[in-house]
Amino acid sequence: MTTSSLAESRSFLPSEPTGHPHCCLSISRGLIDLLGRILPPGPAITLSIGSGTGLLESLLAECNPHLRVEGVEAESSINEYIPEQNMHTVAGTWDLCSAAEEAEAWLFVYPKETKLIKTYLREYGNKEMLKTIVWMGPRSDWQDYNLILKDFGNLEVYTGGNIVAEYETMAVLKKG
Image 1 (cartoon, rainbow, N blue to C red):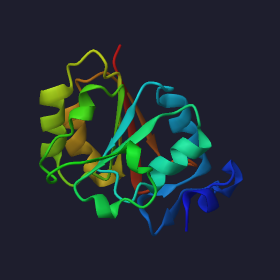
Image 2 (image 1 turned 60 degrees about the vertical axis):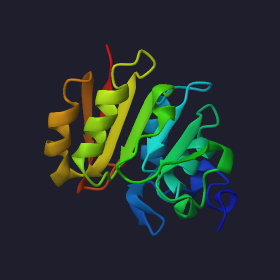
Image 3 (image 1 turned 135 degrees about the horizontal axis):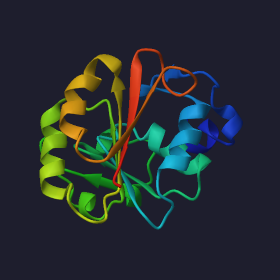
């Protein structure tokens, strides 16, 4: 299944958050639309750190052509949807991608541990370029990540509704 067949139009997307075998996050039209409004338009880069198959990132880019979304993953073979020129590979789940320094927004979707986000923030979090961080994952994990991210900027939290599944949280942090 290609990205084109998945998202030929915005109408493909379900109105309610729905699981998909190629994405750990539930996907909905509301989620893609909201991220399209939150994330910076190109040429600014949105870097999805731990992009997995790249389904979410590809849907974001296709449904919001004004976005420039790039992915980062430890194994290039995992990516199925992000064009090769928009994909970065790192040495392992502990390794940082230098493209984070040039990104205006970071996406973290179902990150495995807080240590990686702490390391990214320590290395690149104070760069002028970075304006937005979006964290999405299990609602039960948000408290641990909130402790790390809370000082980054203004926080908006989304739970349930037509954005994320009832058991998920999306946190959007914006500088000033």
